[in-house]
Length: 324
Ligand code: F6P
Image (tube, rainbow, N blue to C red; front, side, top):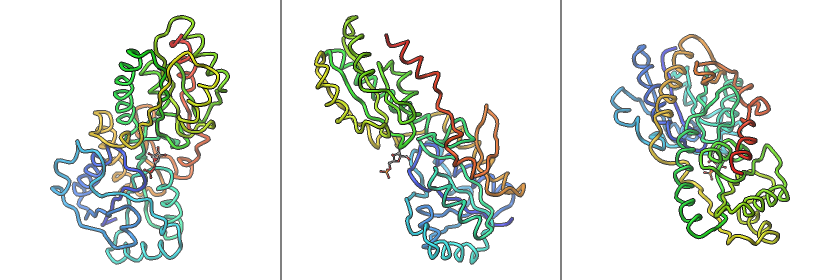
């Protein structure tokens, strides 16, 4: 293994820069030639692959986003796109690839690695925390902290006006952000894609709060839940429960930005370091993850098996109890 490239793909996540820095510097430390691919798989296809040295990743550890930029690349799903990407890697004699991203990124990496026999290691980088084999994905902790800060502010105004707020958070099909932020912000209820909470149950809970003199209530709505967006849910609840003045906030993409938390800086550094060491040790088609505070390799296939990943369901029951 002589030449190693790194790319970020899919939704950006805080901590990706810390990880890029670790990948580049660990590779250089071991005498490898290092490359950065711009705009994820699109950069592989466009041959937008640039040599990187130790100084090209200076002062990025604390920055959100990704200096390599990112994209959701449809062309890489086609044979022609993958073929071109392979040709460009071959031309530069790049024999190792570190991909930082989420499930879409890993699906692409798996197909590419299997077809062209490229050494690929994945790093779980997504705020959604929806991969198996890592307790935490890169960016999840920062996103949680960003959401908590926003909800704290909403709580102030909700309480001053005696209002009920429905706050929609990201996570695509994963309720991880919603569940953790519900605990940390003292939300009255949370709607998740993984667990069904009927609107009837939700209204019963809100009524119970109102009858025991709760002045405000916060319901966290995970974007993938089955009842639709926060506006639709607020409307349905309002039809049957009129005690509070009701408002909606959709937090949107602010959840993806910002300086990474200490946790994500350390996680990005550990995973980037581990990814290059895994490549050097001859590993391929694996994801490096943090499992019980140790680095663990999981096959890309298992990482993508979302049936294995565990929502912390004890937190759901706890949210219910602690918000009476
Ligand atoms: O995967 C990260 C994520 O932020 C999801 O939580 C969300 O559903 C999606 O990306 C939004 O994607 P985009 O930024 O492409 O609109």
